[in-house]
Length: 218
Image 1 (tube, rainbow, N blue to C red):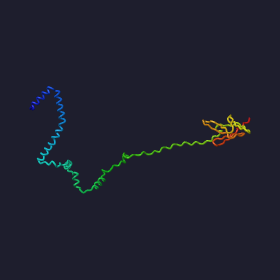
Image 2 (image 1 turned 60 degrees about the horizontal axis):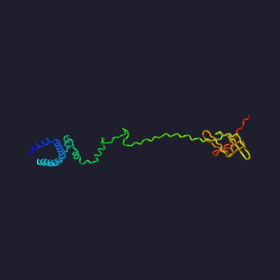
Image 3 (image 1 turned 90 degrees about the horizontal axis):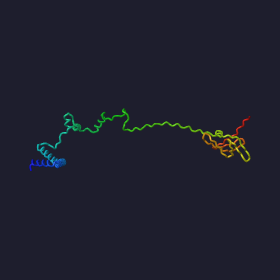
């Protein structure tokens, strides 16, 4: 079957069944997509080998590397390449180059003093002394007396068997407790001794003598 006959057969098949022809065409495209790189991998090495063989046959030296681009550019400008400078100074030691670099003002580290603090150094916050709180004045110990809390003795009865004191309208015997409340505080005194004209009250280890007030004459 010739090529023309094959083309006519494909046209007749496509005209008779266009859907089938479209599917076959799509499959052909997919096959080419996957098989083309593989086929090119087989063909490319052979083409490169043939090109290399033809180059050697023409007398070209393919093994020698071409000139370096940096050397070509330096030669065009009339400058020396680094390799040429090394050849010009073959005996210069490395410490001489290091000393030259240290003396160059353009390679020195810039100081940050005029521009503020170093951002890579942590700055500790300055300690701030807090003002001392004023001390509260210590309470002054005030001695509480019977008179200061309003205890008043109006009379006493002193007998061989019984002793009684009349304090603030109430009668008390020796050993009894006299209680008074002033400004919300409770004060307790103990009747230690009853005398003919006075009474001795005790509180917190201290003794206080309360006398009968003198009568005003009239």
